[in-house]
Length: 221
Image (cartoon, rainbow, N blue to C red; front, side, top):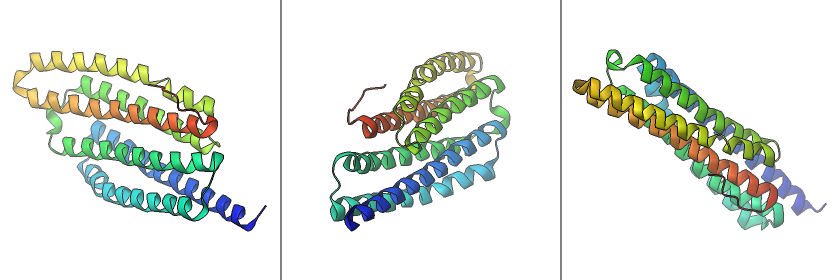
């Protein structure tokens, strides 16, 4: 193997490790958002919002890192697929982190005693399901682009969509019974939508993993 190929392998593995590290930061932000939802811990909410700037910075650094590899080493074949897909995955992860920060901001504006326990619990369950999809998609990426695992992760999206529809109906019914607290209901609808979008972007991540593995661009949504 030439020195150039050895360097490319090293840069590729470094980029992969850094992307997985970013994924762990995003997972932690999502888990913390559930903690805020369940316990209304505003200190944790502020930590999520503050940490979002760091994730944004990391996104830019990783994108630059990937572009340098493309320009300096001109990868081809599976290496090119990996670098190109990695650029898209970096963007998807940063947007997922934005959803966690948005949820934290919404909850910072809510009075904890005004939040209805039942819909909050179901919303948290929705968040758990969406986060599980994200974790599974990133695990597929970590395992040398495991196609079967990626497809399985994306396959859970329909369940999340169905759970969101049921939750929306529940929240709307609650708003009708508690019109004076309609703003609280609207806040919960926004939180549910953010978690549903996490699942959608986890599906996008799974599609990128399948592309890395096969060279084909599937539609797993």
